[in-house]
Amino acid sequence: MSLGDRSIMRWSRHALVAIWLLPLVLVIPWIARADAEPCSIADVVAKVSPAVVRVISVRPPKQEEDKPGVAAKAAPDQAGSGVGSGFIIDPAGFIATNKHVIDGATSVFVVTADGVRYRSTIVGAPGRSDIALLHIDAKHPLPFVQFGDSDKMRVGDGVFAIGSPFGFDTSVTAGIISAVNRDIKESPFDEYLQTDAAINHGNSGGPLFNRLGEVIGMNSVMFAPTPGSAGVGFAIPSSVLRFVFTRLIETGAFTAGMLPIHTQQVSWMLKEALGVPDLDGALVTSVQIPGETTPPGEIRPGDVVRTFNGQKVLDPRDLARKVARAPVGGDAVLGIYRNGVLESAHVTIEAWPRAQPIVLDNDRRRTPGLELVSGHGENGKPIVTVASVDPAGMAADSGMQKNDILVQVQQTPVSEPDQALRIFAARSSLNHHFVAVLVERDKKLFWLPLTVSE
Image 1 (cartoon, rainbow, N blue to C red):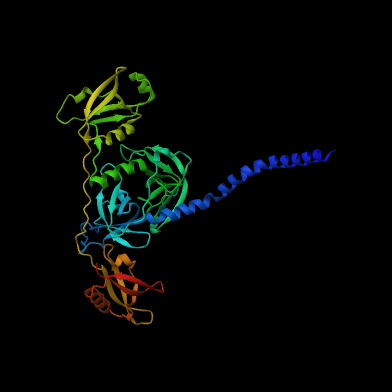
Image 2: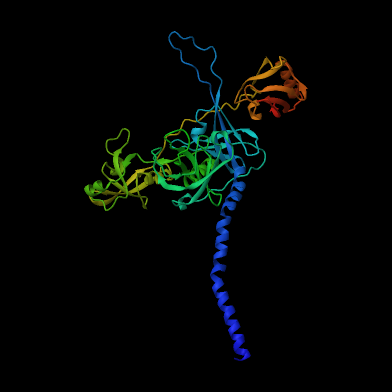
């Protein structure tokens, strides 16, 4: 064998080894990416969580009803508060949440990820939807999140939620999309995303993210036979959120279109009876035209709406969503099946009735909202104890709680409520906004910054 032959053999063996190793080279990067995926989710959570907030709604006290033989209370119970979630969608301080989180509130506060509590205003809370837009004035740009395309989400896609379940801020749960376009009979427009990411009380109004950190839904409803998450949660899709919030931010108001008709789903047997080609469309059950016996455009019960302004109609909810986005007062052309024949009808788009606005008591001057009483400690020495904290007052901003013991105020020991109140007043008169309070709670000492003026 010549030297050249031996060189060829060595090259051949090396080539065979290289070819044999090639599949491993191609597989190794895929394995590395798969192993790195959990870390990438943590990175995404770290990036978006500063834009997730806690929403605190202060509701008026409940007045006990008079009952025979029972003396009525002289004063109502203390105001209560509820906790939900939200997320910042604009650096100017616009915050998305659920309407049911703030419904009935007299004051609404937002606690950002850095622990600062802001009084908020309500930009809008449209009727027929569980959506509300809040605004806070932080006096500096805030971190915010981007919307993703909920229409691209598929069953099995990974998602994660961030919120304040049971008041535990910035809690993260992960799961998948369990179903899309889910109708849970909440509104005519239902197209909820269903997820098995744990949703609990306090998650309402918080964001549901895709794995890229884009908001593809707002966590709104949980179904469970017992208290707590059962892995069946529902989120309003971002396609709806973006539509509503864009109008509210740009115009300060929201209007949605509706048709003066009621419809239902086309079943297989009704399809056969009415002579329509398939199950698409919305079957008209009634026409609501006040003061008129003949509907305009000759639309009648029994018609099947197949198209809206040339767009295919899949079902009643699809029709309601298309109409909601149409200009109020405009003319709509409906393609309808009647007696097996496709015809056209013209109907005027009407406006959904405006929801009753939620009125907040933002003009009232805030006080510390702290009721202090005298007491005695275990050693018999006089102490100052917190009897109650008004959830709308400034003391609530600091995290002060009922039964806390005030040990020192501005490094001055206090043993009577009047001592503490005099220091509060002195600091406020000097235009100092905060006082440092040494608090004892559960036999542990820590300092709280109490707001005394705004």
